[in-house]
Length: 232
Image (cartoon, rainbow, N blue to C red; front, side, top):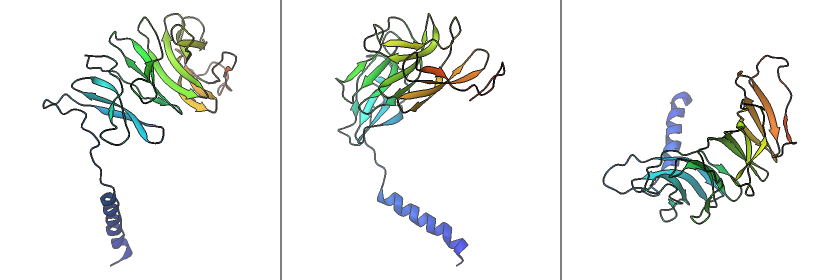
């Protein structure tokens, strides 16, 4: 038999051996009710070295944050943030060395940022807002949680989580002063700072970097000088 004909058979044999040595198995059935509730499991995120944070739904609690160590006993709901409600909004999570940040709607349909250390008692709300808030991207760099959030006064701008603030958020810089919004996004952590873009109503994008302070939030080189738009 030629090598060309032998190769596909060899690959299939090796793949079969690999699958047989690590068979997938059910870690936990999140909902054992007889009526299918339309279950959802998604956005798994490594948490430390031995656990996974993810979003899961069941017929009792709706869509809420869960955690798993890969065993049935170690897979459980972290906190029912909106008790009695199906829960419909979730976000990708942002991991740090010892916690995971995420945002979720509560029973008043307000969007809040939450932090968990992997325990139910350690799952707490970061923001304390009295009105609905749009929360966009988040990123963690150094010791700062950067947040793109919509504020009724300054628009969608760059904020940071701040435990000393009455709302839990502090404006870093109004990137587009006036009624317009800077709309920061595409966050990329870089050492103790975050690189991001702004997206103006004109369609123009600019590249920025921030260390979490107003003075340390500056625009990087203008890729296209003048009035022409850029798209980094």
